[in-house]
Amino acid sequence: MSLIDEALKQTTDTKACVIRAGATEDAAKMFKELFPDARKAIIVEDPNTRRVAGARVEELLVAAGIACDRHVLCPGGEWFHAEYKWIDEVREAIRASGGVPVAVGSGTVNDLVKRSSEEAGVRYMVVGTAASMDGYTSYGAAITKDGMKQTLACKAPLGCIVDSKVAAEAPKEMVASGYADLIAKIPAGADWILADAIGSELIHPAAWNFVQGPLRESLSNPAGAASGDIAETEKLCAGLVMSAFAMQAMGSSRPASGTEHQVSHYWDMEDLCYNGLPVSHGFKVGIGTLISTKTIEFLLRQDLANLDVDATVAKWWPDFETVAATFPKVFGNRPAHIQRAMMEYPKKFPTRDELYAMSFAALAHGAHGITWYTYGGTVEPEKGKDNHGITDTPEIWCNMTNLATRIRSLSKGYAERVNFAQALVHNPPVLVLDEPASGLDPAQIVRMRALVKSLLPAHTVLLSTHLMQEVDALCDSVYILHKGRCVAQGTAAEIAARCGCATLEEAFFTLTATQERV
Image (cartoon, rainbow, N blue to C red; front, side):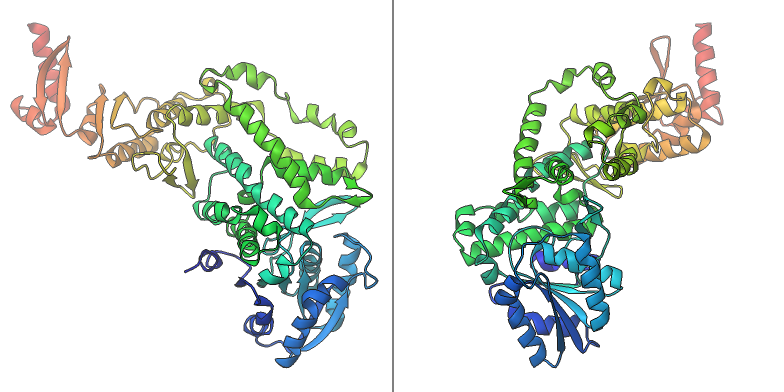
């Protein structure tokens, strides 16, 4: 089974995908399989994509008994980009036609049809014509609305075809843009590892593999892709489509974007142009990748083991209101930008207390050299690392539902659970617990006991306690110490029987009282 077939099992929207030389010939077949009751299509294209693929798609559909309408964007060949004004035009064309939309083009055409179909309440398929970006099968459409580029919610296409022969013949600037968008997944992956380490955005193993798995092969021959080699272009197309499938599988752009996309989005808000025309997404992301890798290199040079957490957190904004006061200057007093920032940023703004919590998680994991590939309560170790078979996170184990508090401000019971999690983070072969039930409520005590038992028999647990009920509940072997001497050893039942007592607690009092008389 190919990786694309595997991905299609986990995608939420896209149910069919073909990437190969000559794939355009599958357009009618895919249409009929995905829309079995449809008798009409509306092809949305521009003059260039009409020439390279649209006309052939129409021929194939008509030959298969599917009537076709056409909607040509900018029929005079003028340059255009994904502005919301085109959504109104395409949406009404779809409604007037009543046919299933078939987008023939690359990023701009696809995004316009994607959002227009959503607003028209219908599904669509796409025939891609260039390896220019990773958005063919991603959910959401990047549209400029109210003077600001933003991602508008909409489903990904039901089906996707990318003809690698057609894509190999596309302008080289489009191939370069796609290559830059794909190579950005390397630092984006590094960002995700960091986010996972601090518990901010946990790694989804399947989504990670969809992006990072084919990445090296997809990027292995940039010269070949630039020269129009069909096989190399096909690899590039596959890598881009798999990135979008990862976003579908996770329901987030996290698998395919990081700091470099933040740089691109900033330039989107600045309306960055070159020679009077907007710069492509891929080119902006490509420069953002250089900035991102430089940032990661800076981080790797830091002595994090001796990080002064208090001093570092003190440099952060004291509250959201303080940072919000800078928005007018940052966005040049543009009301729409400021309004958007006021809506979006509070959801992403970490308080100083939250930074303390993140630093605890990061330092505890990092101190033991552990990278967590975590999702939904399960963990997969980093390749090449020995994480000793851990199957859950210590934070989940210890029921730590709120880490956004300074540790010194926690209750005694919560602080005890934090300590327990820190001790468990590297899954040690020997665990020493001193009064682990101290400060815990009855439900937490039961959970703690279950956790300790789950570590056996693969781990050795040394328990020090004055609570005999904990010994009865947990211990296979018991040593009773009194004034520096071992006064009894064996199982709880054996010690009680030797002392002629019904319980271990009675035996303890008997033994310690005897020793007092001695």
